[in-house]
Length: 81
Image (tube, rainbow, N blue to C red; front, top):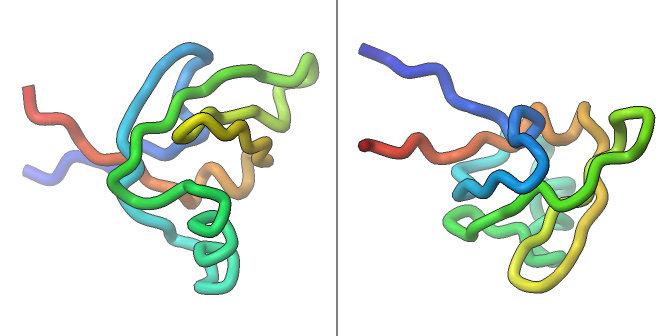
């Protein structure tokens, strides 16, 4: 049974997950990795703008603000519990 992948955009404030992979153009994925957002790293949704977009994510001590349209293309690892 296939479990649909969860995107970064679905992470609630204060929730943590592991970055799985990007479904973004290579250049954009490379730019995110330069900022520390690397597949396999833990990410936390730290703050959400009052209007709901963008959201600030905390990765390895760095805070990165991303728009929802980008977060929809960053997929998280599925946890087996």
